[in-house]
Amino acid sequence: MSDKKQTTPLAVALQYDGERAPRVTAKGRDTVAEQIIRLAQRHGVPMQENEALASVLAGVELGDEIPEALYLAVAQVIAFAYHLSGKVPHSEG
Image 1: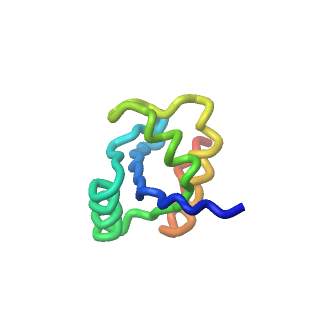
Image 2 (image 1 turned 90 degrees about the horizontal axis):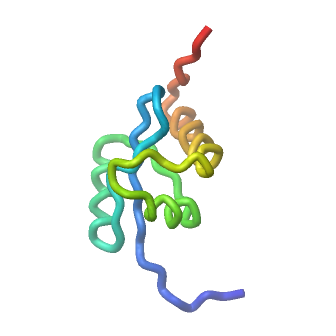
Image 3 (image 1 turned 135 degrees about the horizontal axis):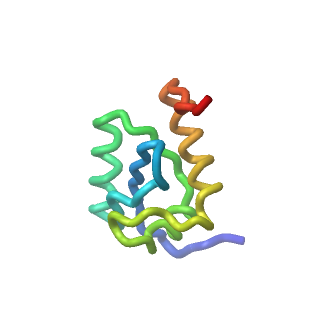
């Protein structure tokens, strides 16, 4: 099935401190999305393309924690980011 409709770029930035649920810190379409992506690239922030997840996260208010229903999907993105950056998440023990 082919989609001939041109999709507009969408970017959502999350902040995760390891303590609380991730927060939406930036989001936007078109030029704003391109600016978010450029800033992330400039600062070495790992990125993952996931249009469906970004669309849902775009509905979260800026500064709000992500809803519990998205924990697993976002945890997978965070694990991917840790892997890319060679970091290991802090574990209690």
